Length: 95
Image (tube, rainbow, N blue to C red; front, side):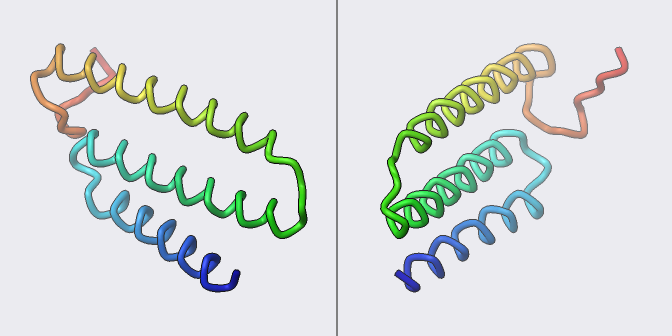
């Protein structure tokens, strides 16, 4: 079990590192956020399996993460349609 916890920590830290380093493109930021969500799911799965608890909360977490992902993709499509690219610096919320 300790190996899985170490693996999930490495996954979440690498997702945060990519999120911090590649903050120019919205698509790469969204992909790294989804990677962090998957590592959080793995952490919760390991924790709930260790204490022999029900997995209902994991289904709720997956549902909310899918909603978050679809909202992020909708924002990406809207940004590409209005600005022509997904650069964060070209997006101005002060129209």
